[in-house]
Image (tube, rainbow, N blue to C red):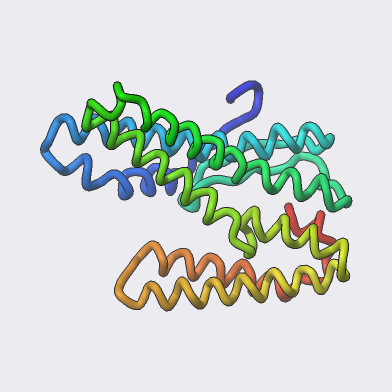
Amino acid sequence: RVRGLPVLIDISFIILIVLWGQHYFTSGNTRLMSAGFVIVLGLAASILLHEFAHAVIGQRFNVRPEYVELNGLGGACYWASPMRSEAWPRIAISLAGPASNLFLWFLFDQLGELQTVQSNRMVSHVVTTLETANWWLFVFNMMPAYPLDGGKALDALLGKIISNTNAARVVASLGLCLAAYCAYLAVNGNMWMLVLAALLGLTNWAALQNANNPPWQRWN
């Protein structure tokens, strides 16, 4: 528990972290292994902060979080109470997670400018790696597809302009296009892109089939 909110760590998250840091842990270099350990902890903390940002903003709008889960796809915040039907609360809750990564990117960028950090090659590498990781976490989560935060925010925004059903169809269609692009990038044997293509394809196809459901029900 962190501040009373349960945090579940799925075994797939541990596998993801180990695979991501494998080149550090198998380098045989003590300094690189230590740097890899710090980077892995920093990445896990960045993902956890992302999910807690969702939870905190959700509480501001009287949407009670049930627990946070860290898993092989990063993480997820699950809700104990129904999601708000209004668009702006849903947009704010969605964008809170990417905003936390944008803040961390700025923080690590400023740390990287310090002379004491630049003078130590290994510390500079750790800071730069975490800066880059948080930037890509921000960019990735802002993509207009389910189940990403950008897709949920776009769903809520379009729902104010067109019908909720058509909003879901637009986001799901964009998600399928993104899945197809990831599959194209996976042609060269990129395992991560292949997994991502499968996740986005299945999720957005299911969203397309369930487009008639109210958006606040689709969230859970």
